[in-house]
Length: 129
Image (cartoon, rainbow, N blue to C red; front, side):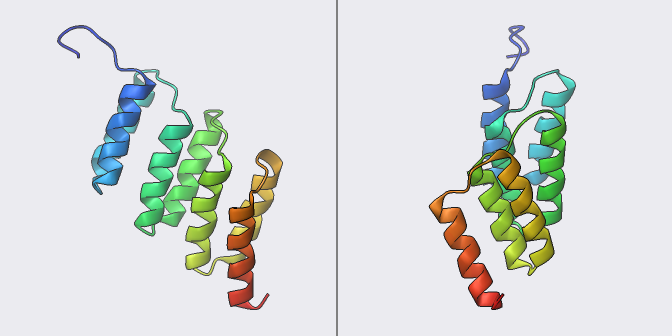
């Protein structure tokens, strides 16, 4: 693409990020993200979801929360699916206070669906809270 003077767009970057995340190549995914940001391309919901899902699968929940913060600074509003990834990851670590905080934050921008509420209820029942 570069040889033909074609600049990558958000879709191009998202495809690369998704593939690297799916392959467990986190370093490469973040390199592409940094290239995207430095190139002036605005990340979107797909960018966020790919990165957070990959971090969640690797039990890197603190980094997933940091990614959520980065995207919020760039006006990318997380959807319910993204919040669900984060909430489930935090529950798996037993981070009840962080889950409650994240759930409150979610209510300010996204309406929980049945699956999200069911996941929370199940987790609370397991914790007997």
